[in-house]
Length: 100
Length: 469
Image (tube, rainbow over all chains, first blue to last red; front, side, top):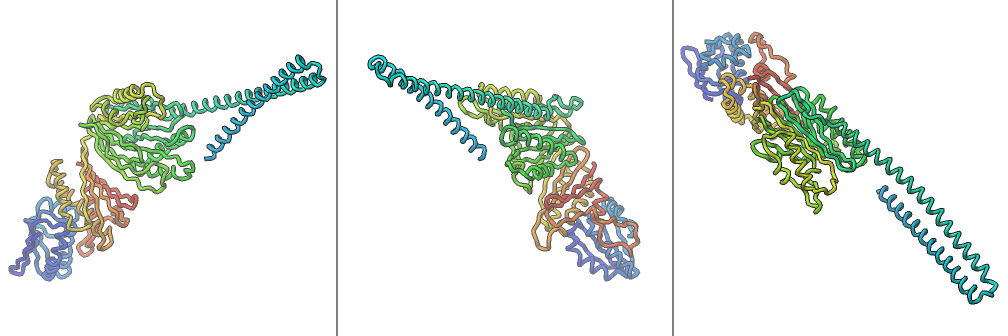
């Protein structure tokens, strides 16, 4: 699991590459923590290279989304695959995130 | 021990009685013969002696008296003998009744399920002359064949009583329980309590799912059955322990799969330990050599019985000979997969490969494969993170039963009791402020799987998840 972060025009984009399973979620916890510092702006979670996500990965998405809600920012989830869309559907995440 | 001492005492008593009779006969003979000699000497040579007459007379009286005593004794003995014979006959007829009651308890009508085309069965119990304690039984419930074969230690009325109890326990305890290990454990608990006569029962118990061919079984000290698949071999069985020995014994369950036209043959040691006149044993090799794959159950049983008879060549049969042949003719395209993981979250990728391999074999589409992977990961990581104390090593067993139309995953761990099915339903429609961070894992398992069932057994958490495909 790789995460690349880029900041452009006040928009923070995180490119998620690979499988965000339980062990990967543990490893990447600091990255998602650091994303919360930009929660007042716009955070884009780019999922075009994300092949899998488990509940511990979804939990990171949720904490970022909660931080944004608390500080008036927004979170955009970009380019999710059909498989991951299905997981978002099951967990009600489609209603929580702006999906593009 | 008490019975043996009595027998010895009786024997000595009987022996002394015979000796006494013999002494009386000898004394009588001496007395009478002595009278004869006296008669000869005194009447012929010294006929004039005044003592001759009375002495002869006294001896004659003594001799006759002894003969009368002897006759009285003989009559008494005859009467006793008559009584003993009557008792023996009565006991023997009671043994016959016991045997008949015993035989009435086991299924004897073949084919037992003429309406079914997925099962071809035959069984036989050739009783020894003395009433023994072999048994077999079977019936179908919920499209599963429950069957058992057993051998009670000892012979006579006690063995036949325990046989009847065993059969009743099998029927009762399997009526609401599908797990062979749990049925056997419960039978063992009942039979160990108050087992003052130390009568044991070796038993093999199986539950064959007639739809899938999945055969779960538990052995309690019985000899391994023979499976007839592409080859003929003894089934892999753990010996465990005979019933009635140790109340809390932890019986381990095993399983295998029968495919169309496969069979399982169960027998008691009366077959393999049948003796011929040279005291040689029939043995496993001879038995295996007369079995054939892909044959009718009645032919198989007949050929084993015939081979044993021919081998024995009229030598007395000392033990019951019992055979149960189950020829499976269902579809039975089930397969089993197994994976063992340590409670280390870094093992999750291994689980993913395990599920992917299954998905490839079963040609599942990618979406389904991914969601199965997700459900398994959620359930397994739950166990890994919460079942065992911090830092303790523990194992998680993952069994997959790949049946026609469904996949069943069974997770087993020895961690602290935890029933994930009790977790409250996650509210996925709540606004972001109210959404809890946790609880999504079990929610996903519920969403993906068609059935989820938890049980705690023998210090283990067992989570069964079924996905219809």
